[in-house]
Image 1 (cartoon, rainbow, N blue to C red):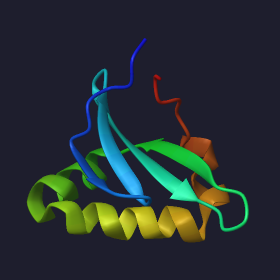
Image 2 (image 1 turned 90 degrees about the horizontal axis):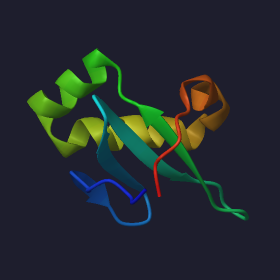
Image 3 (image 1 turned 180 degrees about the vertical axis):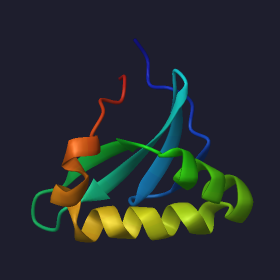
Length: 80
């Protein structure tokens, strides 16, 4: 399986990918150890991206970076 195409991104911060019927936001987290948290957007988050563009994703990505454990229950794998 290959990595899905990138719909939007901010280098070394986040990227948005279509995976099946979902939109998955991959967020770079950590300071000493770098890791990625991938979450499927909720319908409201997807609507915000469509209405506001990348700014909506920047806000969400920043929240994931600040509180990654809060988003772990929503974590999904990103095909590679």
